[in-house]
Length: 221
Ligand SMILES: [Zn+2]
Image (cartoon, rainbow, N blue to C red):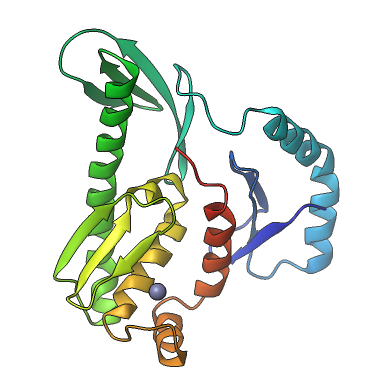
């Protein structure tokens, strides 16, 4: 059986298995599900899991930037629609389709990234408004960054930087980074008081941290 992250939720009533485009698996289950039921569920799903992982493995490693490309948008999957035409680049979302109009590939890529950055800023702000009162601290400034290797950081001056690629991971993992960086406003290190504070704000942080780490190794776009 391949590796998977188990997410228990009090709100959930049914078992649900997700495989994202990087091949990372998440099993979402009701809080009280027994291990035996989880194993039975996974056994029943084994052929589907095998087929899906095989298909992902055969797919090219780096997604080709082309019309029809599947993109993650938090918990949703959306599809790229490319329109090459002269003039100012434009991005417009229509349901699960993301229309990008631009003169060439470079400008289309730049427009897409800009659109994701704006979405990241918007989403981050809403989630910081949610988490800041729980942590009891608010950042002085929020910066949307684009490093390949970091999800977020917090400067001694109180600036929280967040990677726009957080838009490519599920919402609860984006939330983890928000809570993590806000807790650095209290404890600017990774020692015990920091984790205690984070555990108070987000009791299941350890689970989310592991899931994010798994995805991080495969992140691209
Ligand atoms: Zn940290």
